[in-house]
Image 1 (cartoon, helix red, strand yellow):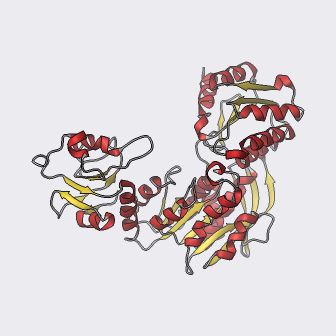
Image 2 (tube, rainbow, N blue to C red):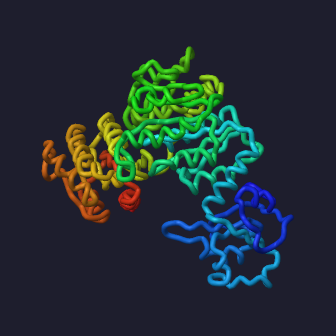
Image 3 (cartoon, helix red, strand yellow):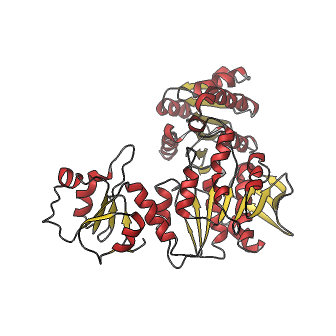
Amino acid sequence: MAEFKLDEILKATDGVLIHGTNGVNFSGVSIDSRTINPGELFICIKGNNFDGHDFVRESVKKGAKGIIISRKDILEKKTGFAGSKDQGLIVLLVKDGLDSLHGIANYHRKRFSILLIAVTGSNGKTISKEMIASVAMTGFKTLKSEGNLNNLIGLPLSLLMLTPQHEVAVLEMGMSAAGEIRRLCRIAEPNIGVITNIGDVHLEHLGSVEKVKEAKAELVDFLGTEDVVSLNADDPLVFDMAKRMRGRVITFGIDSEATVRALNIDNRGLSGSDILLRVRDSESPVHLTMPGYHNIYNALSAAAVGSILDIGIDKIREGLESFRGMPMRMERIDTGGIMIINDTYNANPVSIEAALRVIADSDLEGNSFFVAGDMLELGEDSYRLHRDIGRKIAEFSIDYLITVGELSQLIAEEALAGGMAEDSVHVCKDHEAAFRILSERLKHGDCVLVKGSRGMKMEKVVERLVHLEQD
């Protein structure tokens, strides 16, 4: 974790020192009283479901050397702090705790002259980020954001992990509203951007796919004349952003004449894909272990960044082939009798169709089951988009459909209308009901795909299935 002097913190936050004296050093920065270490600076951040000011007392007990607050009254009211006590404790007053975290993270980022890669898109950005890091690691000491720490709290915390040893950083940028990508860019100051695709996500907040495009394009708008962006040439909404890029543009794709392409694709369903990777004038065969046509695009985005970093095609291949996937993202769990595909991290129409295509392209020994949870945050298009998925399920010839949630009932209705047999479609109110149906129907050689939006917690079905097979 990054170390700071008190005067650096004051400069980064525009804070006012209301207790303690200058000349103090902090061994790190924390926003979580549960994990804070002695000597660190605790920042009180107010969220939708919590207020860091409520945990000042706990952080001080655990050895926090300083605290950043935005409510001066909180000291006496909630912590029992008194000026005559804790003489060594530093207290800074700021306008907003989250803004202070951003200022500190940006201050730390400016300590380093580093290639900083920002990855965004409607789908695949986490896998792309991980693949990019896997490629970058073949030639550079690389920092990557852990998991999906991609928001206004997670990204600055990732930046604070930068050390002088790092040569490249790969950070994911997520958003749910216009302006958030721009704000993340101001914190991280990327010089390389990657945009994977644009799709039907966050429509509840943004209203249309065109507005999703504009929100994602904030990354391109931030980059300067000396910077580089990698764009998906097969996605018209993404490729259109090339016109507004002031610096260099690198493209990747399958169908288009892109800088980086996948040729001779052999899609092996759950076993992954074999491709001929072309990077400019160089070619190499590559085996991708991640299943799905959509993950070929994620691999191409990583290869494109490898090209930007002047990594040779052999090393790019090494980085791609060594990547083994992530939990809850097309995660294959082979129980010895039943194959479970845990794709429960999130869901939207594009990602569900991509996952269904993987099952359809696989040579299964038994039946295919799809356990579908609601897709959330789709706004006024929600009903239509759920019905669209129902029609696609019928087209992909999934053997059994089990839905969980009110919106997913629409998926079931359309699947039935599309020709699925009534005894193959089950509408459930909760995870337990879905599990009961699965436990009654599943046989050796069957495959179960489980997917739904994060708020649906569909991983609970996966957990029950794994325990069932272990018993």
